[in-house]
Image 1 (cartoon, helix red, strand yellow):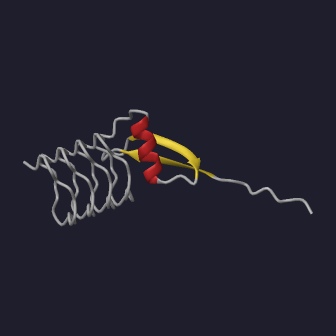
Image 2 (image 1 turned 135 degrees about the horizontal axis):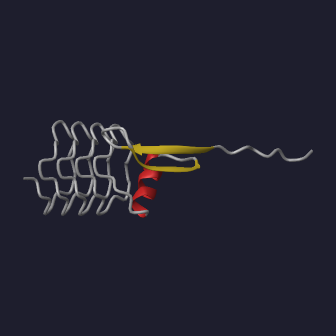
Image 3 (image 1 turned 180 degrees about the vertical axis):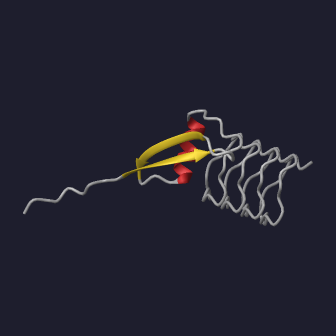
Length: 128
C-alpha cells in the first residue's frame, strides 16, 4: 500500500485598513492572523489604521509595531510584547491586554475603555 499524499491548503489572509483597503496580505499553510501580522511587521508593512478588531494576537511579538489609529477593539493581546509600540489613538476598547508588556509604549489618546489591563506592564508608557 502506498502512502497517501495529503493535499495541503494554503490560506491567504488580508490585513485591511479601517476604510477597507488592503494594507498587507500573506499566504501560507496553516496561516493565521497572528502569523500574517508578524510577517507584515518583518516586511516593514505600514499597519497604521489596520482593522484588527477581535484578532487573536496573544503572545505575539509586536515590539516597536506602528499600530497608530488601528482598531484593536476586542482583540486578544494577552502576554503580547508591545514594548515601544506606537498605539497613538488606537482603539483598544474591550481588548484583553492581561500580562502584556506595554513598557515604553505610546498610548497617547488610545481608547482603553473596558480593556483588561490586569498584570500588564505599563512602565514608562505614555498614557496622556
